[in-house]
Length: 411
Image (cartoon, rainbow, N blue to C red):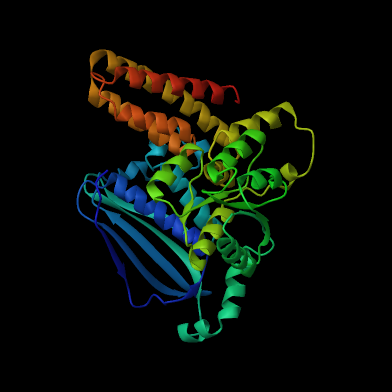
């Protein structure tokens, strides 16, 4: 995907500070900008923000304009439908028109906002949303002077949440424990990965901060063993901490379904934002937290969810019913199976472009549902030359088929 220039135009009437749901606002803007970038064929992505007076304060209006393929007016009515209403294939959702826009609408409906689109086929689109907020009466300087009061306000979402901090360095321990306690979380320390594995219980913690490099057992290995030990359970979000090269660690993290990697030393505000984002998408289900003997259907549900990356599964279950997710996974399996057959044909005919296209589609849809292992295998296939790397492509196709069988067994 080409990098597109992004132009930001904020009108003077937008206040520097106003009360609103910052986490969900960032998520909506991120989804819409990502969607615009994916479909833009030329020109910049333009993000505009302005406000107008509202009975309760102000109404923030944000629009994201692209110069891409555009959308036919007849298709407007289907853009923001939930998964249960979407009749097109999963790959459309993976490319941004189904899942991302449905999530945006759910978020804005819940915040009292609205979302819409203006588009000309072949010329581009403007997705916009409006969200109510309240102007902050205090000046920025006055708020900065009231640091303790601001911290109390900011940490309200985190108050009382339980965090397991796995870190071996004494200085880093002190910094992290001070940070999370300042944010109002209840913390417990694990001095290395082995201790973290011993202390961890999905009923006991709401989130985990896991360092990568630790003695006896490193963080990545600890996470793998946690996933094995608690297979079938909905695990809390796990944030990985590292002082190493980010790209290498991020690849390792994605291979085990961890999407958030924070680089040490971690600034206080960055840690706070990461914790808020992770916890805001966590599934809160009191019934699952109560000890009980699972029924066969409950067991199948937990097993299916456990095969997805924690963040993706939580995001999906926060927005949609389990049956909607299950239906989507069924379509995903069918779609992937058909594309694997196309990849086989492309291998036999030496069609590198077709092979890459089908693998890229599988990679995207797998990422949407959090099946990171499949996404990784598809990425490797996408890079293959069928004339010279046929064996490698075949091995990855076989690995994907095994994973699809494992997922299918949970339905």
